Length: 484
RNA sequence: GGGCCGGUAGCUCAGUGGUAGAGCAUCUGACUUUUAAUCAGGUGGUCGUAGGUUCGAUCCCUACCCGGCUCACCA
Image 1 (cartoon, rainbow, N blue to C red):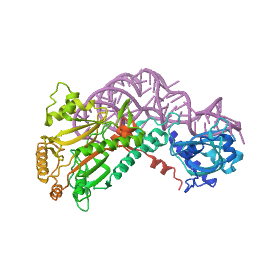
Image 2 (tube, rainbow, N blue to C red):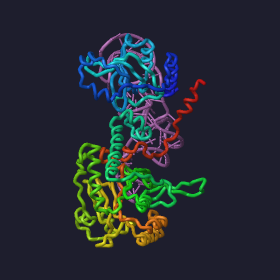
Image 3 (tube, rainbow, N blue to C red):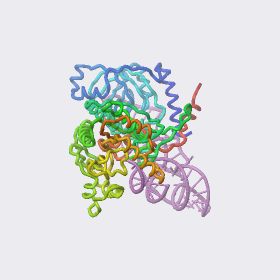
Image 4 (cartoon, rainbow, N blue to C red):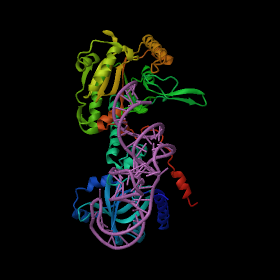
């Protein structure tokens, strides 16, 4: 028998022993009086004498992170919401049954403790236990306490272990939630309303990408997972929802890399009667405030660089080529300019920067520049070589939109799988008249990377897409050890 | 998909063409304020998988699987 099987067997056995003591091996409800982070917040400054005088009673719950047993007394650290507090259990201070329970505990078990606060001889704020409650059993071993979980693959596949053993990882996802909260708050404050549009679409559009295909049984039709919500959001602008936004998943059936996950979170927002310059100003405000809300500063440390989200420069694509690709023909247009930009400029864009005036060839949904029809009123935001935002003055002329779709269809016939499909329903919507509007998309995962100093998009997505892991086998082991 | 690096005990990692190692965890014993608790003793391994070379392979070779980085594609 392997060690792991042996441990599993031991712990199942121990579960029964705990039950025999009169505890429920899997408890139900435990009303704690304070959380562990709150304990640290409120009592860290108190001296041992003050605590002794007050004798603060409390009930806490958490997962056992460490145990130190010394015969007739011992210590444990309880972990709750990323914070730990020490518990002191002595044989003559708790019921005999509870002390026996303490001796049965394994690292990773979840318990409740009733007691009072004190400081140990070495000064550590601790809970002097008077009563223990058993709440949940771990059957498998926790990651090693000193090094934590180092195996990147396990961190992604079993994120719960990562969250338990790595406070830094937990913090990334707390910050991600703060970022999304910040974006919502800022948009709401400007009169935007949040909407949800279909993920399952008959025609995919709003971006250049290959889709995932699925099938609806009752309707017996193929459906695509959306590659962008863009066209639906603009239908809503036609309908008079003048300021709308959506924060949700897009799906693109393409490569996976440190900055690409097949499903990713996009913020898209549309504002009627605005144009791309209004969106530029808005972007700068949103990004600056988001950086402050998440990190406390508009200047953010990323991979050794200080990225300043409070001061975003604006360059046309041609100006960017002129600056970063000297010797190249910066006055180029069309695909030539795009290639110059992609091959020479993008890699040099470290500081957050707005690049505007994109060639019409790659901008089928953006309005042309009145002064130069080779270009569109479109910009993208770059930071640390990554595109994090994309915005433009929305094309609202149905005739022109039809021509753009026709242009995309030609590209598709020449083999461009990512060229836009014809979306007649969208053209019909535009034919009812869409107010002029500015629209923008911001990649929430990438922005999270930048604001949390993470190198890989997998580190800011709780369950990144991985290849299947193969046989796990725990069900068979449990089946074999099931006494019933 | 191409290139490079990695996969050894539950975890973190050493290591060698000739009987597979450490620390933590686990088990037994001692210990009523410890701090990676300590001390003594024990258990635990298809060395990623499958072939090949060899008297002998965890080690060398080939293919494959999984992961990371990178290039291509993309946001």
